[in-house]
Amino acid sequence: MIGSLGIHNFYLGYTGKAVAQLLLSIVGWIVIVGPIIASIWGLVEGIMILTKSINTDAHGVPLAE
Image (cartoon, rainbow, N blue to C red; front, side, top):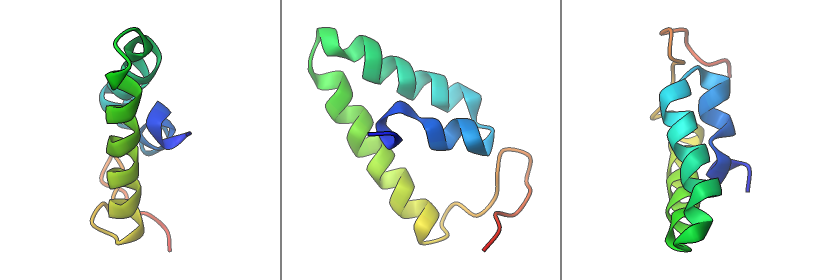
């Protein structure tokens, strides 16, 4: 649920992606498909963070172990 809202992107400093994902989740309820896409997007990015494919934040600072 939180992943589909883009909270992880806000935390990492990617505010543009975070706002896009948040709007897709909230405004996307009008077309029903928006939240499904945002959920898949959040799941994929969550897996990428856990597998260390995304290992720095928006400022280039390495993520802690």
